[in-house]
Image (cartoon, rainbow, N blue to C red):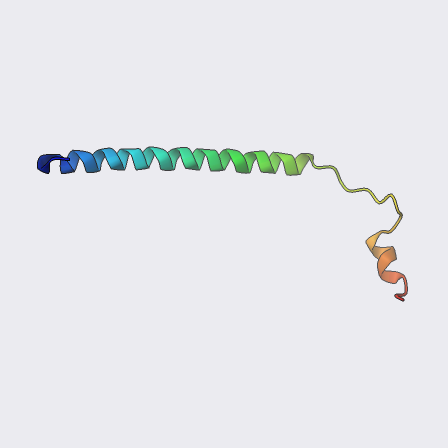
Amino acid sequence: MTAGSGKSGDRRRAERLKAALRDNLKRRKAQEKARAAADAVKPKPHDSAGISPEIAASKPKG
């Protein structure tokens, strides 16, 4: 940079940073939306062994 181009260089840097932050925010929002959609579709776990939390708590240990 030359001595007189400091202001325009700062402005360009600020614009690049602004664009990068905006893109990052968009990406993070899209990731969160995808995670929320995946959680909503996630199937409920089944109990193929027949051990529900209520039954497991009532059985004697040992």
